[in-house]
Image 1 (tube, rainbow, N blue to C red):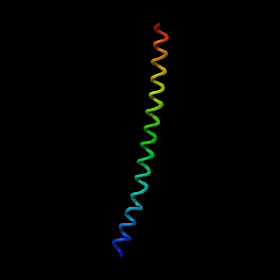
Image 2 (cartoon, rainbow, N blue to C red; image 1 turned 135 degrees about the vertical axis):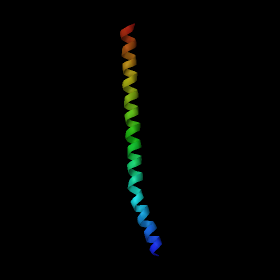
Image 3 (cartoon, rainbow, N blue to C red; image 1 turned 180 degrees about the horizontal axis):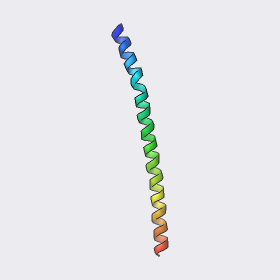
Image 4 (cartoon, helix red, strand yellow; image 1 turned 30 degrees about the horizontal axis):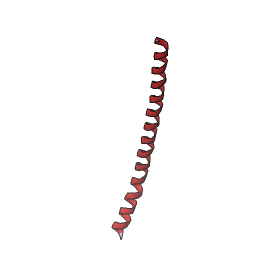
Length: 51
């Protein structure tokens, strides 16, 4: 019984790390998406300026 409680406590400790990892992944994906949009806008502005 004690080992089962220890396992449960271990899982409850691990949970926030997974949540933080998923949150970090979402933030990185959002940053990449914003960077891609800005890069596309810069490229388009460069093409319009050079033409």
